[in-house]
Image (tube, rainbow, N blue to C red; front, side, top):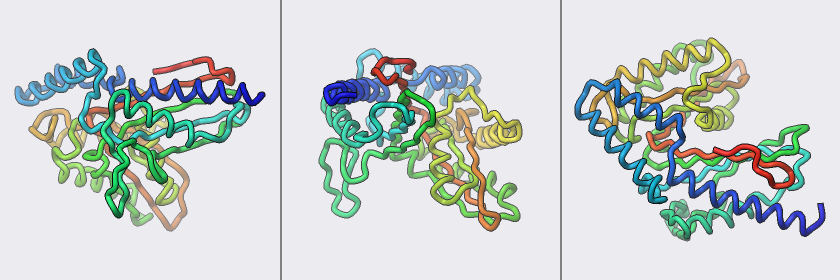
Length: 296
């Protein structure tokens, strides 16, 4: 592709990213909206029903008026799957930074990037190694797929890494996860969505847990045993009576998504990434010519 073609495609990607960021911060995915409406219908606590009504009213207002549906506009996580035949393989940090700066001004977004030592905030949501970008190369593909996940600080603070004894890790980790959520109570703004990564190493299991949040709530793991474990954990968490915003109720968790990887025989890592009810997620796939194939 000629230089002008590269520049045009980069601008196309940047503009699409700006639109995605606006969508991800002012809308809620249909599967999450459906799950919250269902939880409200099944709720027996009047206080919990009221909380669900407030949540739904907030979603409606944000979507209608194109304003953030949560005052914590979160950390924008970018998951990029590039086909090895797609014309642009590099430059994504530059493209994403430009899009984030523009979206921060347009929406506007709260400045959520601070230096870990000085607390200096550039107020534009970019910085050293920020925002998080996760990249995978897909062999034989000409397309580019990008998912954006906005992660609020309250839910992120509940996330954990467990390095368990390999002899009993599988039996031990569900209770450890439940204990963390029980102790957290209303801090992660329930009802939560829970991503879990099992296996790999300390880094891989946490990444798997975060990637698990990209899977729709109504789409269980294709492995039957893992799907059963997801359902078991979901039922146990919802029996805690934490409820929406920690005020009691039948629904503490909207969904549990688990992904796995092979592990070292002497190590049993488990990662859990917690997402609040405001599960802001957007996705787009484009062709090598910059044409939209799918978006949500």
